[in-house]
Amino acid sequence: MASAEFDLGYLETADDLLQNYVLSDEIYWKMNASSPPGEPAYPSLTLGALLLSLKRIEIWPLSSRQEARKLRIQSAIEHIRMKWRTAWAKKSREEFRSRLDLWRNYLEELRKEPELNIDRYSYEVNRRVMLNLLSKEADAIPPAQEQMLAGLDLVLDGLMAVGEFIWDEELAAGFVRSEYPYLYFHLKKPCQTNG
Image 1: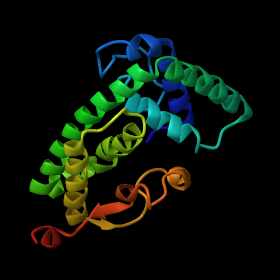
Image 2: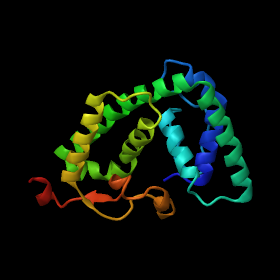
Image 3: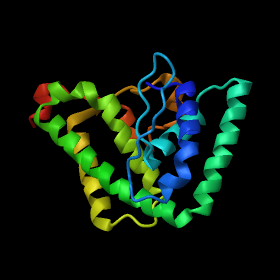
């Protein structure tokens, strides 16, 4: 799981690229930067990953130095978001479609072979969280995609059981169960998945 320093570094790196990225046709933009030692590699620059880091950075306990970095980067990102609002909303919609396909593919793998794919869940569920965040930024999500996401949530409900928060406990207060129920799941016993 990422840390506050990971998210701050990702956001600072993204800020340098953000305007060109938002105005491009690309959904996934390679970032040539190293994450802090001992942390996972930074993902590609996408609005979904950016929004997830922005959400987490609001929750992590920060030092006064980190807080100052956070406020500066939030201001810079918000400036680009407002300046290029139409492009931002369009890119959010396009990424929503892409993330939806990836989430559907993972759930299909999880449904077919739960024991082989459950270990990826705490990472793959990032996509479901990003779908939530992107839907609030997009200009309009097509109804068919909204219906597909609702159907995928039903599939997930059939595979998983309510459990404890699956990410770092420090983040739980910002990802409440009522809005992010898929972050409070664990795989049902194999006999329960066969219906």
